[in-house]
Image 1: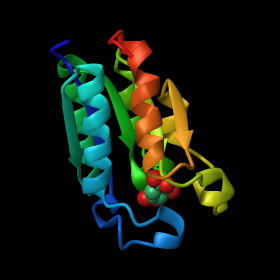
Image 2: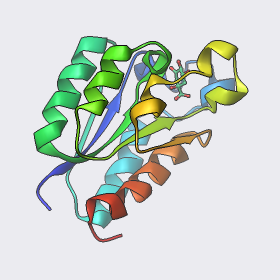
Image 3: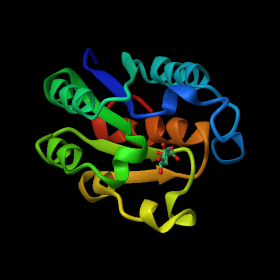
Image 4: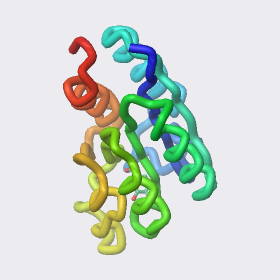
Length: 148
Ligand code: DQA
């Protein structure tokens, strides 16, 4: 398969490792990329792994993914709970988009209980730290018809 899996990360996820480790653990974003890369190689699919602190850049990347990606894992960080623009971008996509979170937002503050991403995504994996991404990669495989 020549189309890639896009793993897109939103605000503050560049700080993983030192950011609230009691909630997010001590794995860094580089550790998560390494874990995703290992699954991508096993699946035989290219991986594009990115992070941005800017909502519009995430919108641009989701639009890029419409033609360049086979499927998307999206951890939109706090934009999960606020961004109608990301909701609309996902609704405009025909490929599967999975919502990913390290923590389980439903166990946390009430403002994290609403997810614009979850309302548009194929499904959600949350609460497993770095493993949420690995599980997401594995969940995406049958949806994009690569070997799994
Ligand atoms: C998060 C959960 C969000 O509520 C939070 O704003 C984040 C990280 C997670 O991966 O657990 O930045 O998306």
